[in-house]
Length: 70
Image 1: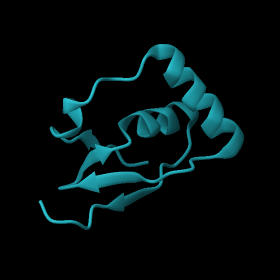
Image 2: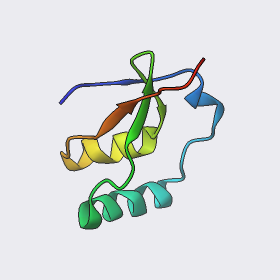
Image 3: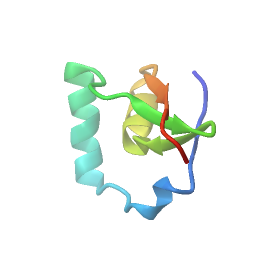
Image 4: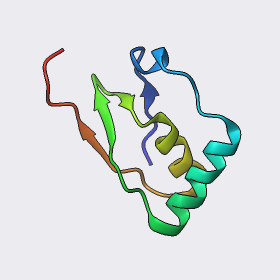
């Protein structure tokens, strides 16, 4: 499993509360990862909490490259 860093743009948004992070892990465990993690410049632009949840569960995260303009 590859390790990705969080893009500096993503840090502009607050981190998820621990209770919400636990609910996300439970959701991914039951239903799988519903949305891909968006990567820009080799770093996580959107979905850092999904990424962390996948890693905690031992699930290979699904990612896709940002296709817009910077």
